[in-house]
Length: 378
Ligand SMILES: [Fe+2]
Ligand SMILES: [Fe+2]
Image (cartoon, rainbow, N blue to C red; front, side, top):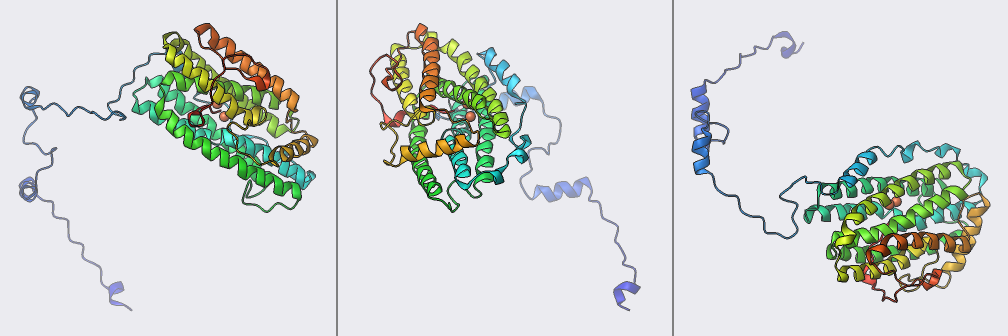
C-alpha cells in the first residue's frame, strides 16, 4: 500500500492577512486607484480635475452620442429587429436535387453564384458603411440602419451559400464539373468574381469619399433593383424553397428601400447643385453595375469574355426547365425599366436629373461613367 493512501494529509488553515499586512505589501508597489484612505470629496476632486485631450482625428469613433435626427429611421429599425425568418429554417429538405440533371443543378447554382456578386458582398459592404457612419459621427439611427441591413445581407448571403452547396458541393468554384456546360458555368463564375473584386476595390475608395446623402442615393438604386428582382423571382419560381427564400429576401429589400427613402426625404431638399450632379452620375454607374443581374452586363464596367453571354443563356434555359424563374431578356428589360422609372419619379421632384439609360429606353442627361465611383449594392 502506498504511503499517500495510509496517511491523512494535514491541511493547514489559511492565514488571513490583516489589513495592515495588506497595506504593507501593496505599499511596495503603486497603490491602485481604487484603494483610497477615505471617501473622495467631489468638491476637492473638481479643483484637481484636468481637461481631457481633444480628439482631432478626422475619422474616429469617439466621442459617442446617441442623437436621433430622423425618427422615422428609428421606427423602421425597430420593426427590423426581428426579420421574421431565418435561412436555416427554410424547407431545404424539399429541394429534390436527385431529380435534376447535372446541368440543371449547375444552372441553378450558377444563378446564385451570379447573385452572390451583389448579395454575398452585402454584409461586408454594409459593415463598411456602418463603420464609416460611426467614424463620421452620423446620427444613431443611420448607424443602426446599416447594422440592420448588414444583418439582413448576412441572411441573403447564407441563402446563396446553402443553395450553391446543396446543388454543387464545394461550389461555386472548388468543385469539378462533370459536363461541358458545368465547366463553362465555372468559367463564367470566375469572370463574375473577377468583376466583383474590381467593384469592391472601387467601393472601398468611394464609401469614404462621399457624404451620406450621396451614399444613400446610390444605395437607393440598389434597393430599388433588388426589391424588383426578388419580387419577380418570387413570382416566377415554382421550387418551394426558393419561392419562400425570395419572398423573405424581397421583404427585407423592401425595408432597405424604406430606410433609404426615409433618410433621403430629409436630405434631398438640402442638397447642393454639385451634389445633385454627382447623384446623376452615380445613378448611371449604378445602372451599369446592377445591370449585371437585372439585365445584361454592359461592357462599360463588365470585363467579360465573348463566351460569357452565350453560356449564361444556356444556363438560364436549363434553370427554367426545373421551374427556377429566371426572367427572359425581354421581361428583364421591362422589369428593370419599371424599377428605374420608379426611382426617377422619386428623385426628379427634388431637382435631381436622371441619366440617360438608352439600354432600356430611358431618356435623360448624358453622363460619363467613372469606374472608381461605383457604390450601389443590394
Ligand atoms: Fe438590400
Ligand atoms: Fe440583399
